[in-house]
Structure formats: C-alpha cells, structure tokens
Image 1 (tube, rainbow, N blue to C red):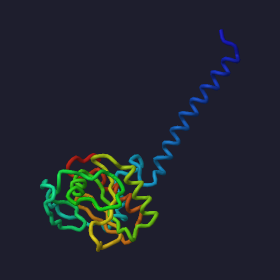
Image 2 (cartoon, rainbow, N blue to C red):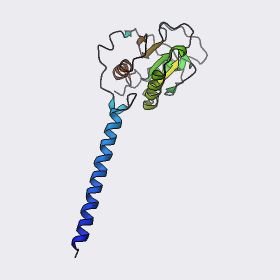
Image 3 (tube, one colour):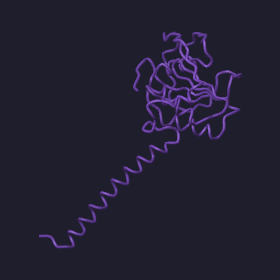
Image 4 (cartoon, rainbow, N blue to C red):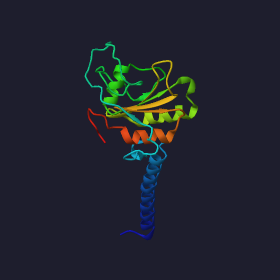
Length: 193
C-alpha cells in the first residue's frame, strides 16, 4: 500500500519526464528552423522560382570517367558536367581549389558546389557557406564551398549543380538556400530527393 506522499512523488516525477520530452522536442524543432545554413530537416522540397530566375541550365556534357591527370576542357566555367575522375570531393568548406575532375564527379553525386573569390568573401558568406558544408555531408547530397580554380571569375560567387549554374554579384543566403532546395541530392548518379 502506498501513502499520499509516494503518489505525490510519482506524479511529480511523471510531470518532469513529460516536460523533459516535450522540451527536447521543442529544442530539436527550433534547431531545425534556425539551422543557419539549411539543416537537412529545414530544406524545402523546391527552391523559390523568383530567387532562381537567373539559373543557367546546360546540356549534359557526359559523365564518363577518365584517368586522373587527364586534361578536360569543360564547356562551362565553372563546370557543370562532363568527363571526370573517379574520386570525389568530400563536403566541406575549402580554402584551396579542389581538383575539377573530382568536383565534377561530386556534382554527378548530387552535390552543390559553391565557388567564391577569396578577395570578395565576406564574414557572413564564409559563415553561411561553412554552415551549409557542415549540415550537408551525405555522399549523395553534400555541399562543397571552395575558391574558384582560376584568377578571373565572372562574379564573386557562383553555385553549381549537375547541368546548372547560378552566378551571384553578391552573396545572398536566401538564394543559396533556394538553389540547394532545388538541386541538392538530385544528381544523375543516385538521386535521393
């Protein structure tokens, strides 16, 4: 037989457990909404068409693997498809350009590759790009940020996906989110969205 004191303790314990579960759920939901760079849980199914009005789409230039070190002349700058090496670039924020042969294969896997001109990179852009790269690390939906591999880029920033390119005169986090929503995880090799 239990006395009233034991029932009160049990009731109080039950309320604390319930509040703890509800509180944890609320924090998780808030974290998803405030992901800072688009945590996978907060990525919409598609991007805002108004923000993507300047996306250029190009014909598929092929996806054949070539031997590492082979010179490939890509038809777009930065490249959006074409022959590439068998390696990939892991998701991340890079201070040095990565091998274009590996970058193109990474695009085929459904990644977004964001390019920046180092002299134009703002603190806001650096922070936002790092957040995207940290939040989206999957093999088939990674996010890579790196400097342009050449000295004379057309614009300070560019976003690429397989067959798609968006050049930006200034960094716009909303445009990056819209581009990722539209193309991340939707490469030809193994689309996951």
